[in-house]
Image (cartoon, rainbow, N blue to C red):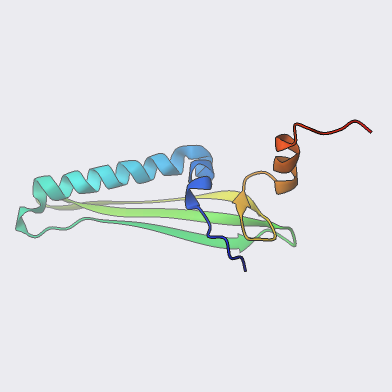
Length: 116
C-alpha cells in the first residue's frame, strides 16, 4: 500500500485511447440535460462508472475493464446505454498506473544523463 493518494486524472485520458473520458463527458451532459428537460415529474438520471482490474499473467500489468452505464429521462420514459472497453496498465511498486512502464517514463524524464 502507499501513503500517496492516487490521482485518477492521470489515467482517465489513457483509457480506451482517450475515448472513455469523452464517453463519460457525453453521458453526464446527456443525463443532466434529460433531467432538466424531462425531470419535472421527479424523473432522475444516473451515470455509473465501474472499473474492474485483472492481473495480466505474472507481470506488473493489469487489464482495466471500464464500464459506463447511464440512463436519462425522456418524454415518455427513459433511455439507457451501456459501454464496456479495456485498457492495459503497468503498475509500479506504489500502485500508480500508467500505460508505459515507469522505468521508461523515468528514462524519458532524465534529460541530464551523463555519457559513460
